[in-house]
Amino acid sequence: MESDHSSALKIRRVRSVEELRDVFEVLGRLFTPRIERDDRRIDDLVRRYPIDRPLMLLVESSDRIIGGALGFSSTLRIIGLDPKFRGLGLGRRLLQTFEVAAMRHGVRELSLGAEEAKGFYLRLGYKGKSSMHKQFPLPGRVAELRLRKLEQLAGDLESGGAVPVEDGGRVPSLV
Ligand SMILES: CC(C)(COP(=O)(O)OP(=O)(O)OC[C@H]1O[C@@H](n2cnc3c(N)ncnc32)[C@H](O)[C@@H]1OP(=O)(O)O)[C@@H](O)C(=O)NCCC(=O)NCCS
Image 1: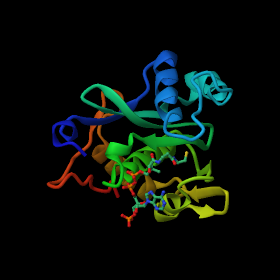
Image 2: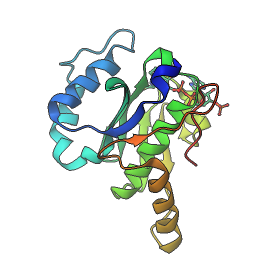
Image 3: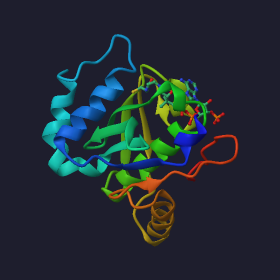
């Protein structure tokens, strides 16, 4: 990761449908074959944006979109990072932040399709084969206290939670 970029890393909510399309386009470029901006897979996200906006996160570095995690209902639809920012723990931090947002949004079990990066999801505690899932703690006093602590660490996702970067460029795990 370039050090001049790392100090300005932020994870925040997508702020508009237009920005949602921009994030989807950035993520689509990471796949082979490339997923186009108007791919039908964006339609569900756009339709659910008013309800599930908390599940639509982007990563920015110096105001440039370098990744994101987009979901709706109880599904993570797509996650990805610019190759320059991979392998340093940022993907883990992004997925953990997405999970915190999902728990607050009332999701009890998160599902995803893991055709790619299955090892990444296994490292993050997901179970299953091509369709993977992870259960969150049942609501209660202890779960609520833990969630509040995680939300503090994740920062204000509306304005953009600053992502800490250690010497050497590693991003610490949220949990
Ligand atoms: C998947 C992705 C988001 C992971 O981000 P990242 O920042 O490189 O991942 P991290 O550095 O946080 O890795 C976290 C852990 O997962 C492991 N990991 C990461 N990607 C992996 C992969 N593709 N396969 C197996 N393990 C992987 C890391 O080795 C690390 O393990 P550790 O616990 O021993 O440290 C990123 O590689 C990416 O954007 N890939 C292209 C898009 C994609 O495939 N998205 C998923 C399908 S929608």
